Image 1 (cartoon, rainbow, N blue to C red):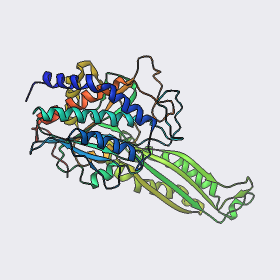
Image 2 (cartoon, helix red, strand yellow; image 1 turned 45 degrees about the vertical axis):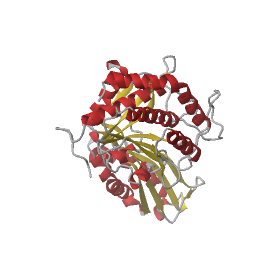
Image 3 (cartoon, one colour; image 1 turned 135 degrees about the horizontal axis):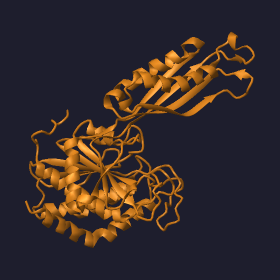
Image 4 (cartoon, helix red, strand yellow; image 1 turned 45 degrees about the horizontal axis):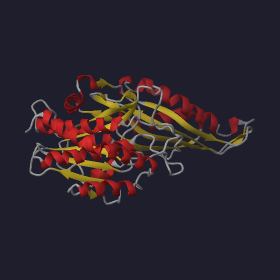
Length: 410
């Protein structure tokens, strides 16, 4: 294996020639966003470029998203993942690459993720051609991350993790400066599920609530008492929270309605608490309305599991960042209650998700994802390419198994 310096020199040469093109790709994707499972143009762009480099990308059976292996032989196999889809959100920026699709926008940075992985894949192909790749790398360009339960399920069902021993990904972080990458061992994002309580009763006049079922009062009990009860039924370190986003019942002030509904999101950091959440929340909802004579339907919809970064894989990611960017480029990052379907992969193989700094020094710190004004410092594209290449090489050189590393999950 050649030295890290020689690998870095090859990647620098690649970026010197290709960085302007990569920026143009990102701007094209930003201007032509596609929603989950409709990323046909994006998939075709990536497929064509990889094929032109002599690789053999395979489009998933749904027609969007693809897998592409780099390297040959029976050496260790690591995966790198990016997501392709945009959000149903209007682009509010005044830039030349503003979205041309009304009501659809890359407000979460997936255009950057796709571009970074495409660049990393092409650079890794150069390493493989030079005989400098100490194993194999699988590129996963995943559809529909923003949908539930997420396009990661499509990849797993397509055997996209077969033979993979570790998996890595980067996600844009507008609160971290460009040139830095946030890392965290253990939980980094939360499970994100949906919880609905629907009540039914005979209805009646508000002057005689004792002769009917006071459905609105019962619904209010659900909304207030279920989250309160969680604080005494669940270990607070699990990070389980229920937040109501929509409540609906009745149309006039003097009539008790026959139906009412409350919808919430459930966020959980701990995998064990996530497994127990559906049964517990159903129990608490039934208990909250038991005195009021209403019928109850409880619906719990799984979204995505928590992303729990493997400690050893996180150390490999940190080493890759340091190799690519220097010691100061690795920064700690906090837990988030946001959801990320990368968690589905980590239920199968060890891996780590890092946060790619995309904030320009003159950008407001308060800028966040999922906003129509979201944008990135495009120098982050080359940063991401360097990090993914260095991390892949670092992980491959570590081999498998490694003494003290966790066993591959089944």
